[in-house]
Image 1: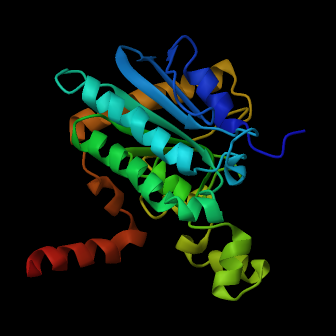
Image 2: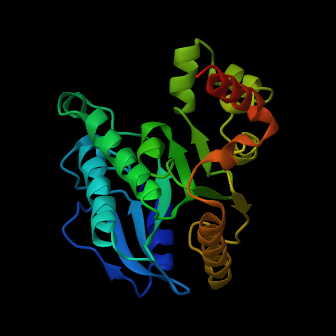
Length: 267
């Protein structure tokens, strides 16, 4: 039995059925060009690759190959669609447990690889491509920053296995000099410390949350519901613009909004 999640791969396969696979990328990246209704899209997922040449990136982590591969997959769309009125949307299917920690990764510049991926997603968004992040599993640490967080709209499936945080619980406990139990108790009153989707949604960062019947292996009904939501998100971006201002409306982001107002006034 595998020790890694197959959610990202399952949702990629379901959503991209009939789409054209993109070749020449690392085995840990699944990329395909297809359609949602009449909208051209590129589906992108980072998946586990037990044979990954970098041992720290075998279980779906975002490492050197994945960071630069994501950047390439997104940059290809920006370049190919530069003069097209109907630019492809990018659907980032997110199921990433972490960035790849390792001495080789640090020595070879994982910070640059992941920054390259984030930069490509941001430039795609600014160039007029709708970028939609679909959270189907873990969205953790630098992996999420590189793959998904730059999206115009974030959609999360409702399930205990869908979690968002800067680091895993054991790591967060060590950094904060607390036990995991103490950390969980603190998270109950401090939403940014929590891992669950409801706490993350209270920060205003999610556009929508969806319940599905079988998150591990989506049913036809699950696929229909998620596909419709993705299409609505793309339409919402077209109607309301490509910036990220929609993330600042929640009550738990009031201080962030106020700081931005003061900075603009002082500037």
